[in-house]
Structures are given as structure tokens and as C-alpha cells.
Length: 521
Image (cartoon, rainbow, N blue to C red; front, side):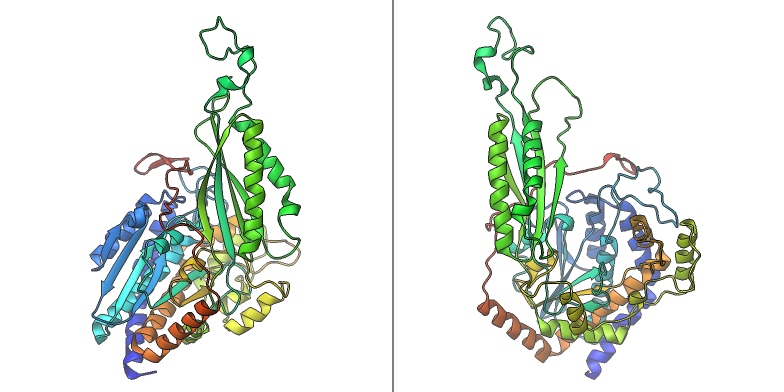
């Protein structure tokens, strides 16, 4: 390590230590907002205003997405490094930052909450960005930091759009962070096995002409085009149910029995809660599927498209199709994984102090458990090398499978050398015979400052150190770019959506009602 790089890293790490109280306050603010996908208005605006106050040039609502942003700060001609914030929460997961199960004050348990949590993802990367900026200023390091706001990550919503619109063009290297979510990916970086393909599509069944269902049955003397006593069109709800039932029934024919895939659905509401005796005019069904490769994803797509056409025909509807996401599997970059993990080793794994332990023990008491002396999952305070994590990951996969699970960072990996890394979030050690902890426990621990601060410190310092290596060591960046070019040439993988694809922000996604702080679900 050069003297310049070492001194710059010390400056960056000191900035994070000195600003930790402010960082945790920022995190609490985003965590409490907990806005769902495509509706993260206040979370996004907070980032925009904060970044502008820190000297960044910020495009508000980048790529036509109102809750996205793109921020740039430059200290002269040099490499461009990029990371990003996420801030969408998940409906149905409201949890207060307490040691017992309870929704946040004033909201029902069906309101959104941060589960991963994306709140700490964003504040950790922000910490890394601002610490890097401070070190670049103090030590005269040239280069550019690019920081994007990525809404609707749970739907793979924004990164494909930012990519198609050129927001990642000209970037030399990308660091992608996520709080740990499944072993062995805890305090490590991905090596060979990246996330796979992800497709998500909304099928809207529209019954615009119910009066043409059975014209001969209409009463010629009725002023209503189709009398209430006449035969009625089945309507959109029937189409939705036919589509849902057929697709769920055909799962075994759509997907193999192994391979780490998943198939999820959501019904979107257009306000049809009143049960009138008219045919339902619109019903929307979203299917999302994760597969190891594109071939499997395309097979599922063909089955769903056929099912939608058949369901619409049966119920006297038209079907409108709208893509939400269509993501490629990720690209590996060993050079990036190596430089990042060396920085993670230098920083060290998170450590949970007495205050965090006391919080965890109180959670255990609230569940009727005897509090443990060391309540946190052992792996959350340990490092695991990318190669060892890879070995553990492959134990759960068939030999033919190249990718596992899905996350939308994969789209970014097709524009520049990228590393995907994980730092532990607070998770408790299972108690023998008690079964897994309820999901609210991890959600709550993600919102309590004492338990979430170690994630921010470790991830922020790791990102800053990696950025400073890339900015001050030309040979490191050159090797990452050489490997990226080699992998692209060996396996071209063009984008799966057209360049003019627009984010589906206008669909009836879950939202808050009410004004200001008086929110209701």
C-alpha cells in the first residue's frame, strides 16, 4: 500500500468514526419513512437535498423515475467509481424499533417496513461515498464519484432503466453492497456464483365491452345497454382467477425440481373494493420469477403468456402486458472481489458491544427465552473469504447451475467491473429446540441504532478503502477492466429490454394515504 493510499484510508475511516452519530440518525430517518417501491418520495428527496448540501451535482428524478436520482462529484480528471443507495420498504412488514413485536406508531402491521434493510444499504454506501470524498479533498486524489438512487429494488425496478439510459456509461468500477441475508454470504464478497435472471411482468385483464358478451340476451326495452337481469360478462376478476389458478397449477411444468428458482405473485388493486353487480372492468396480476439462467426464465414466460391469453378469452377480456423487470445474470470480476475483500479484512468484521448485546437479550426475553451471553449469530462477527464462501455456496447447488438467487445489481455488472459484497446485519443465534426467530426480530434489530451501527461502520469503511485503492492504484483498476473486457468478449449478453423501456411507475403499486406525518395504510 502506498503512503498516499494508506493516509487517505485513515482519513476516510476517521471521518466515519467522527460522524457515526450523524450516520445513525440519518439511518433512523430513512428506516422510519419506510416507503414502498416506486413511492419513496420523501426518502429520495432527503438524499437529493443531503447530496446537494455536500457539493454533489444531483439530477432529481433520473431516467424519468420520480424517486430515482443521479449524483456526481469530481476532484479532477481521473477514474470514475460508482455505488448506489436503495430505500424501498416492503408492504406488510411494519415493525417498530423495539424489542417486542409491534407495528410502527400510527400504522397497521400491513404497512411497509424495511426487511433487508435497504435503509442501512443506502446509509452505508453514503458513508463510504462521503468518507471517500473527504479523503480525496484532503490528499489531492483525482477522480469522480458517481452515486445513484435506485428505487423499487424489490422489483428490480430502476437499475435496468438507468443502464438502458446510459447512467452507468463511462464508469470504471462499481461497488455493490447488501446487508448479509443468507449464509455463507456474510462478511464476504461474491466470487464465481453471481445472482441469476429475474423476470417480472404485470398482466392486466380489461373488460371494456361487457355489453357484447351475449347481445341476444339484452332486454331491448331496458335503457341500460346490458340489463342487470341479462347474462353478464364474466369480467376481469374471473380472468385473473383463471390466470392465477392455471399458472400455480402448472408450476411443475414450468420449472425443474432443482436449481434455486422461485415464483412469486401479487394482485394489484385499482380500487375495486366495492362489490357492485357490474362486471369488473380491470384486474391486475403480477408474476415475478427468479431462475439460474435466461433459458429457464424464457420458458416460464411462454407458459404465462399463453395462460394470460386463454384466461382473457374465457372471461371476455383483453389482456395488457407490462414488463416490470427483465434482468440478466451477473458477471464475475475476481480482481474487484480481491481488492474489496482485502479492504474488508483491513477493517475487520462487525463487533456487537454491550449495548447491542443488551438489546438482543431483551428480544430473547420477550420471546420467553433465556437470554444468551453471546446472542448474535456467530457468523455475523466473522469474516469468510470469497473463495471459502463460494465453496459453501456450491454445496447447495447442482453442478450444472452457474447462478443462484437474484438481485438487480446483476444489470450493473454488464456496464463496468463490479464487486458484490456483504456485511452482516444483526441476526440472533438460533436456540436449540426453539425453531427460527420470527421475522419481526431481524426487522426490529435493523432499526435500532445500537445493533445496526456496526453494519454502517464496516460497510462504509470497506467501500471507502476500495474506492481509494481504485483511484490511486492504476494497476488494480487496469486488471479489473481487462478481466471485464475478457468476460464480455467470451460471453456477450445483450440487454433484454428495449432502449426506450420506461419504468412502470404508473401502475397501482401500494402507497400511503394521508398527508404529512399523518400516514395511514
